[in-house]
Length: 491
Image (cartoon, rainbow, N blue to C red; front, side, top):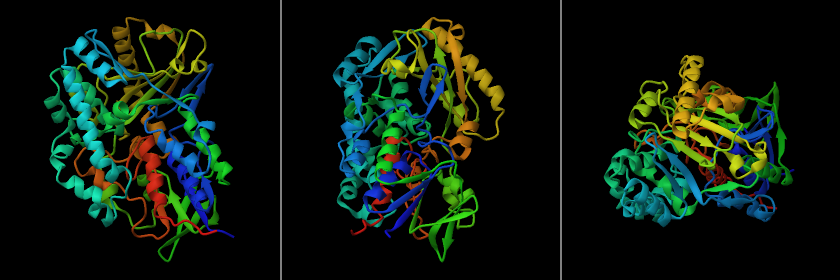
């Protein structure tokens, strides 16, 4: 009998880990507390509408394709996607609107024509973003930061002399204020801090790496919706022999003589040669690893922001809206102060509207749209959420009405709500934080949990709450980094 591996959680990183370990020759079993795979990357159906429940932006599709290639299959036969011509539609209260074209020159011209921002400043911002990516991606995204070889390797040595240009010593907002003349462009580029639940007025300018993914590399949409990432990889893992146990909440990681030897589920022991935790790292230590040594420094780090999402079925088509849409707050700084300092929701929040029916018409009835309408909110600290949600809903609708000159309330046919409390319950995310620990200080990237346990042998970690971070590409890379520590089994 071959070696066995148990994976706790079937989030996208857990599924990716199962594929990588199966390819290495392990017999893999996955235990999932929910009745479905995918974690945050799942779907919601309400009436005649379908919604991607969580992550809505798709970048670095090669991370998905690589898993098919590892299994000896053509990705295109199982998973297909298209590149977006427009990455996002931006709206301001004063009536200004721009489209962020994937073609950088066209985007730069659009910004110069409509906002008076010199086109060269956009090109410079994206060139700077590319520079950060070139020097940091090989280190932060593709390797463990917890191995000496990472810091002494060629990639690291190339980067040490360029620290000043990598944005480590200034905040994202400071860097963007130096780059752009128009405050609207500062706001647009500050928005990328929210991609990992951080505050642009605190987080290092290193996070200006993110626009490179969206513009220089590209933003995409899976032809069957974001949930197809989960479904196609879930099917691939099953084709490789991975076994899934749904509605099976792990109660404990069994540790004997300093080694992880299995898990306990409903009072039954399942033994294995190694255990991979894809559950939120903080909640894992509080529950299934509570008997083990606690990494207190990591557990006490401030958590990222959360989200309040209204899934609305809208009985109208808005031609000015695309797949991704942003209606900006009039006072961005105040909005982030409310989220991170006051633990509350600003009365004029930035509203993000994701509408997959623009690209996938069968997600909504004819003449209608499926709105995934989201604002960034604080993580769950015991706030009066029912009151905050009711106020936020009113403020969001009022803002949409002002910007789009409509009467939204009369167009809402169905509604489903996801708030930080539900996110915490459904996905075991500590405090409902979407990205684990926040990146609101320059050391936060170094303070993510390693992809293995330093105190328990044969225990590994993957997912958005550990290195290298949250979001689909980084979660998939966490599985890759983790699996690199595990030897391939000889036939």
